[in-house]
Structures are given as structure tokens and as C-alpha cells.
Length: 608
Ligand code: F6R
Picture (cartoon, rainbow, N blue to C red):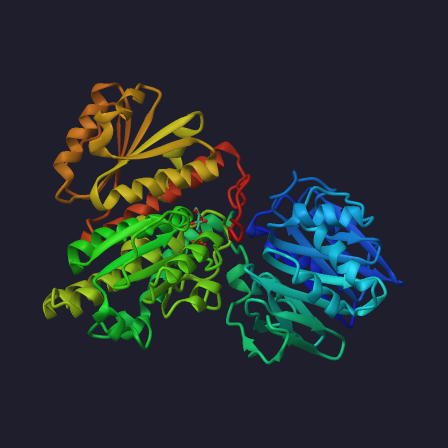
């Protein structure tokens, strides 16, 4: 979603802003822009193309203060007139990430007071509102604070004024924003990757914070307007981790990083001889002892991780588990159970629907909360009592890959810890699970070796319009995930079904033009699955089967087998995910789509 960068520095900020925007491209955007103060005037450049085009347009632009933005359209089509920054009366410039809910009402009021609107965005009201206070003699900070008090909704903003070239004001509520403290200046950004070339010293802003950045330092005010201190932290994000290196796309790089990402996520556990609740936080033992069920809330791929976890939690730990799409849960009337542990799963930790669902659960009286998340300082991590950080490293490709498999690893650990605490795990079983977890990174590496075969297989999909994914039990969510990956990056319509459901409807779709992709682990449901595959073959459907060793599914005409190296027991969903990620990737390459930035999608979905 929208990305923000801002700078007050001792030299021209334009290269810093452009490099920051380039590093935020992964969040997803459809237009970009920047504004600087130069000779007492606001100089703005906007483009509906990529950041590289904005760079081309900026060669003659310079200034010692500026703000920049990549926009992911919500209000108004992607166009230059809707691109940020928005300017009020040539005096105030603003960039914004989020949604202002009362913008129509404010727009009417401001229009009645003589403000002209040149875009369809909700953001433009922010600039005009700040201006309306600024012209009454308030300083930029006070004018911004007064304007924010009138806004309903979510925002991260950066604001500068033409006649105040030494001051940048920013604020956040509901959308991410952080401060960078460098030797050569002060900076703001939606995430730390944008600032790595200029600083690693960052301040993660709290909800409601408003900050004034000047040439001699910065001041932070909390939601109540009180001056506060916030800790300056050193980001451990490495510059290399956000570079493409030898790979063609971030998605390919991130698929290949999975062995290391899993090893990092499991590090503390695999180095020990037994499992302890402490890996989820100091209060975990007491909390886990007090719960009788689990409620998982998440969106998209993270929701699929929750669906896999439900099988583990109920079967291994004997804990009842519900999994809900966060955007639905937040609006439905549900029956709260204060004895339930609410688990939110999120790569970014900033997903607006997941945050809102968590807040909704808390309002209903749920106090036991756990975040499984890849971003340590994210909102969800801060909002939960317990946490387990997946250590996948930054995920830049819009399609989630390594975040998903590490979420599964974390959820498996949660299952084992709960099983142990409930007396459902013998010492021997615990050791066996730990050994299997230790083996997981190398097992993952072996599956990655299927890449050349999958690249060839993908050629068969290049002209397909539709695809059906099948799985059973623990692997049905993996079929869902495979279908999601394929549709989001190759734009092929894909659906997933539990294989037993075929004859209840989707079998009607099967003919020689419909590829049917099946996840076939060597588990208790294998024979049932084989019967389902026969149903497909009997209708002329072309089968692509990802089969474990010893499944005895034969490659015959119309049945293509991808042989998985081994059967990984309960951890099999993690391994079976990887060929489906690779398949989606290579089909997208065949189709020539924008793999890392698929159309209409954003990486962190920070608006509802
Ligand atoms: C799909 C994908 C999305 C995200 C979803 C939730 O590849 O990436 O479906 O999983 O938007 O995002 P997080 O996990 O950041 O809450």
C-alpha cells in the first residue's frame, strides 16, 4: 500500500526521497510523486508510472526538505491528478497513507470556505484543513494537530510548508510510520527499508503520535498533545536482505530463502532439548494454562496458515480451534469466550483488517492474545500480550512465500508447546518432533531442487484460463494457498477444493481444458484422494500430481507426476507448499506478468 518518505537534510533530499520510494515499491502502488521546498516555493513532480519515471522527471529538482509518496488508489483512479503530494493554496503539501472516513463532509465544508479540489482523493481535505488553521496564524505543528483532531479514519502523514523550509511535521494513527535519525538529517518512512542508505537509527511511532522534525532535532507529542520521549532503536535489517542479488525476482529469491528462514525461525528451539512456553513470551505458561480453545484471526495467505494450524492444534494438542477471516470476524456478531487464546497471524503486522479484528476481540472481552508476525515493531506485535516472531527477513514480493512457511513453523511450535503442557506429548514424541524440525530446512532445500522440472511443467499452463487445485485434510489449505498464488501473480482463475467435494459440484467444470493440480502426500487420506483423482481422469481432466515417495501414483497419459523427495509427516504441508509457489512463479514468467508487483495488489494492506 501507499509508501511515505520524507527528509530534512543538509544536502539535496531528492536522491534520498527517490531511493526511499524505490525501496518501498514492493508495497504496491500505481503512481508516485514528491515535493520539495525550493526558494520559498513548493516544487512538485508526479507520475503514474514507476518510480524510475519519476526519477527521470526530477533531474532539475532540488531542495533541503521534501516529502514523497507511492500511491495505491483507494479514492479516485490512478492518475497524475490523484497522485500525492497534494498541495493546498501553494502553501501546504501533504502525503498520506490510510483512509479518511469523514472526507465527504469535510470536503463540503472546505469547498464552502473557498477551497478548490483538484483531485478525487480523501487526502486533499487534510492539506486544506491544515492550511485553514495555518492561515489563522498557527505554526505548522499546531495547524496539523488541529486538523488531525477533525479527522475520522486512519492515517500516516507527512506535511511541509512553502514558507517554513526547516520544518517537517508527521503523524500516525492506524497506518505505519517511523522516524529515522541520521548524521546528515532527519527522515520519515513507512518502513525502515526505505531509510537504510541514510540511517539505521529509528524511532517507531506510537498510535496518535505527532512529530515536528527540524534542523536541530525533533520533538514527539503523543495523542494527548504531551511531549514524550520514544526509544531510538538500531534496526538490524541488512541492506543485502532487501537487494535482489542473483535472482530475477524477489519472489524467486524469497522462495529460495525458505530453508534459511525456517532455520532462523526455529533456531532457539532446535538448539535445545525440550520445548518451553517461554518462546511465546514471559506470560505464556500462565496464559496457556488458562485457555480452553483458540481463535485464529488472519487474512489471505496468513489465514491459510491458520487453517493448517487448526488440524495440528486439534489433533496433536487436543485444543479446540476456530479460524476466521479477520475482515469478516470484525463485523459479525460472535459469541466471545474469554478463555480462548486469540492468535493473530500476519507477515506485515500492519494489516488493517487483522488489527481491527484483534481490537474487536479485545472489546468482546478476550484478553489472551498472541501475535505470530514477521515484523518485530509492527502494530499487531505491540497490541498482543504474547508474541512469536517469524524470522523470515523482509518479504518484498507481494505474494507471500517465506512468511507463510515460517508462520506454519511457528504454529507447529505453538501446537507442540500446548500439547506438552496438556500432557499429550511423551518425552520421546517431543524429541522426535524436535528432530523433524531440525531436518526441516534441509528437507525444504531438497524440494527446491524440483525447480527445473516445475519450470518445464509451467509451460503447459501458459494458455490456460482456469485451474483447479485439490487437497485433503491438512493439505486442503495448501491447495487453497496454491490457487491463491497462481491467481494473484499469473491472473489465471484458480480455485481450490477438498478433493472429496469434487462430486458435489466442481466436477462439472472438468474437461480436457481444465488442469487439475493435486497435493498428494503419503498420509491416511491417500487412498481416498486416489479415488478422487480417478473421478477427474474419467472426465478427461489433465492431472498434475505433487506426490510423496511411495504413493504409487503412476505417470500415465494425462497424469503428470512431480515426485516429492520424502513424506514429512505433520510437517508435510510446509514442504508441499514450495512446488506450488514455484509453479505459480514459473507460470507467471510464461505469461509475462509483473511477478513482484501484481496488478491491483499491495504488500501491506493498511486500509480496510
Ligand atoms: C498473498 C498475500 C496476502 C496476505 C494478506 C495478509 O500472497 O500475501 O493474501 O497474506 O494480505 O497480509 P499479512 O500477512 O501481512 O497480514
